[in-house]
Every structure is written in structure tokens, then in C-alpha cells.
Image 1 (cartoon, each protein chain N blue to C red):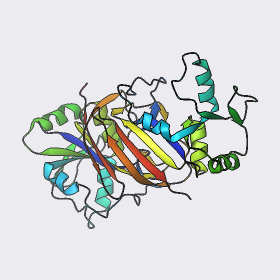
Image 2: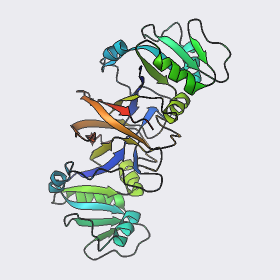
Image 3: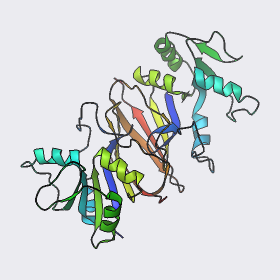
Image 4: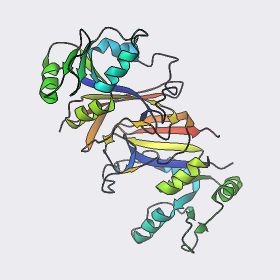
Length: 173
Length: 173
């Protein structure tokens, strides 16, 4: 079965954005395993806000390879060509996508979709690029998680810049 | 100069206690470097709430070696025999203690004292025993941190249970 992987850069105090939405603390000096990760996936899950943000940046482009995109939104009625809108029955639809043929799926964010999929236990793997910084505020990676989730550590990588990559499997309920 | 070290067990989502104050997620099956750590220190810094909690548990005892204790409180007038009360001028007094002869100092907690010493840039080292669990709520390790703090990773240790120990030096302002 295809895995849904939440892979994201995070500060040591658990923020994915600084207090003013800033990302300047994210290291860009090297690959940090991204190229290898991209080989594993062919599909991304994107929440509505993140999707709209990515549209604004269009032209600049994301620099990502061509992935199959699923946009999750209860309010949108259509999405860009080639992408698929998921409006309802998230659990059933994600479970179906996971049984379809294909590579693994990157849960790209944002916060609302992440919480929803975490609480429905639809996320299989968690890969955090823990940056050596305390931001003190901003957008937390985890919010409104309902129950305790046990994890199994499957990989750690330490980079010379002080970034530590931690990868876990998530327990099913 | 003696270092002040914040060494603590934390969930992957940054909590030092669960939603109901629980610690049952903390691994106790092995030492996780604690014995080695205890050789480095001879002094602990304790906040008022944590101090009062430890008094209630007296008799059971903490199991810790005999450390010199400093209790930080603006409201207490006296503390137990052998301990030293610090009521005011925290920054000056901590800076003085750090220049005194002795081993390193364990910032034992709790949250209010940790925030105060972090924001005054009096903490030199951070050692997090990151447990493989998402608690979803509880008491956060970091709260009310005023400014971004840059860290330098100095050690990572991965244990077979999935606990990852991350140790950082903190940048001075």
C-alpha cells in the first residue's frame, strides 16, 4: 500500500513558520535528502490555503518535479488543470488513493489538512528536518491533535550544519 | 566558566508533560546518558512550583545524587535546609554562580524559570531526550520565548527504543 508521508522542515520548538510567516531559517545550502525523497513519491496532498499560496507564486514555479496533485478543500469548486479536488469523504477517498497503484504520497500541508489526516490516522510516516533554531513563535507543526500517537523511529541523519532529520512510522490506532 | 544546562525529556511535539500532567510516556528502561550527565554537574536550579512538588514527594526521594540546590522564587521566604533561595536580581546572581568554582549546573525546571533564564540568555546548553510519541497537548517545554535563538548542534545519540538525544549550544545574544 502507498504511504502518506508528512515531510517538513521544523524549528526545534516545533514551528514550520516564524512569528511573521518567515522561512529564512530553513537551510537551502544542500539537498538534505530531498532528491532521494522525490524518487519515492509521485503524488502530493495539498490543503486549500497552501494551494492558493502556490498559485500566487506560479510563474516562479515550485521547482518540484511533476507530481499528481490532490487539493483538499470544502469551499473551492474547481482547481487548476491536472489537479484533483477533494471536497468531502476525505477518509474514504484517501484510503482509496492509498490502495491505488503508484509511489508514495507527500503530505505537503498545510496545518488544517495535516491535523485532519493525523487525527484520522491516515499519515504513515513522519519526516522532520529539525533545524538548530528556537523561533519562539509562529505556526506550529502540530495543533489540535486529539489523541496520543505512538511513533517508531526508523531513521536519523545528522548533517554538518546541525540539521537533524528524524523519520518515524506512525502507529495505527 | 560553569555552564547552565537545560536537560529534559520531551515528546516529539515539544511537551514535557501530557494533557493531564502525565509522565508515563517517559522511558525508564535504561540510563539514556543520565549517569554520565550527573558526573558533569554538582548544582541544580529549581523553580518554585517544581520545588514545592519535590517537597511533597519527599520520603520517596528524588533518587538524585546530592546536588547543591538553588530555588528560584519571588514569593517564598525560606527554603529547606542546605538549599539557597534566590528571590531577585536573577541575572546578576546566576552570572555570579556561573563564575564560581564548581561543575556545571542543571536547569531542572520548571517552565517559568526555564523561560526566564532562556530569555536572559543564561542557558548555555540544551539537551533534549526526544521521545517517539506525539502527546497532542500538555505543558510545552518552550513558551514565551521572546526572540529567535540560534543553536549549534554538538551531539546526537540514537537509542534502540527510538529515543533520540539532541544536544545544542545556545548562541549568546
